[in-house]
Length: 443
Ligand code: IMP
Picture (cartoon, rainbow, N blue to C red):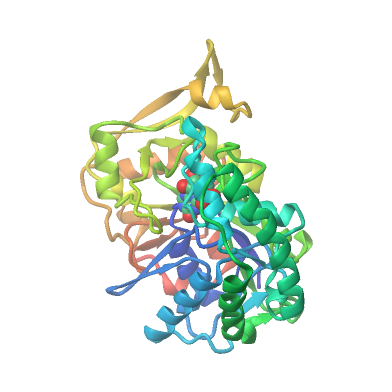
């Protein structure tokens, strides 16, 4: 049984939650490897909508073991709220949820620092989710972070907390001129969280390794997307973790040699939320249309997402950085009824056409997209479940995008609910998970 990484190919919000939900019944374990409660993975089951922030989307399938890996940063208040809400809706967590001892905690001063630094950033504002994710990863890298295991050791927790509160209060007061924190109130609050979370905190790297050795298959669930990666994204307009496939190893403790493949997730068009470069961004009527049809509003913050045409230059880059074996395309139905559809095949910069994604911030901001225009399709694809039923023009669009990107498509999502999914026959995904074919037969 294969161990597969699922990675967002764009700027996040590609529909990873739905794809992981579709794949979860065909694996034994789902593990989140980075990010925190800045993520919002939306899964629609029948008439019910779930938005998962820190817990892997696999939790909605009874018996799937779900792991929050060491690469994730955890806001315990938000995690407990998410756990309680799942339990209230009949989802069992007992024996299904495991939290890494090495995952770092988001502390109350992290969101405060996140908001304070954003408020002073002017036009270089990142547009963060304000959840404290960046400052928590900054502490991790600076070796002053506090980990889940520390929650279980009151003396050590207090010692680390005191040092942090002393330093953060000076920053908050003297640099940002804002409110400060007291050790005792945080200690009291976090010890209560410790009581709640203790049964779930464990050595997840060891467990995952044992499960893999016993032949169980693991799905590595990424959050955000390639272009928001700390090293490979549009720095500094990024999130602070390793969103790309390499992060699956460091964020779980499972070596690359035990990972068998990488699945990219891409929308049929493009979106981005927050600041930063977005070469194929649209403004005006077309952007509004995509936003409305695709319900492009942040699952966590409710912010309207910026919308644009598919960008084959950025997607090809995502293929190179992640080594995608195949791609799942989501939200094809959002493009239904467009007279024409466009794919960016290059960037024009100072008289040159670039086909490799550049590394310079200036070029991202100044490059002009070069588009290929294709005819749109007029009949709806919404809810279609068989590739053969797709309008010819929709198939031509997918074929051209796949050709420009250099990777085959295995799955096409045509609606929010689980079953609005086309599995491409004989695709890489169908070969990885043979049982998928009976769940999504071509009709
Ligand atoms: P942070 O992760 O909250 O620090 O935000 C940094 C950047 O990543 C901002 O542009 C956010 O809008 C973006 N971001 C963070 N999480 C997500 C996500 O789950 N989907 C899309 N964008 C995200």
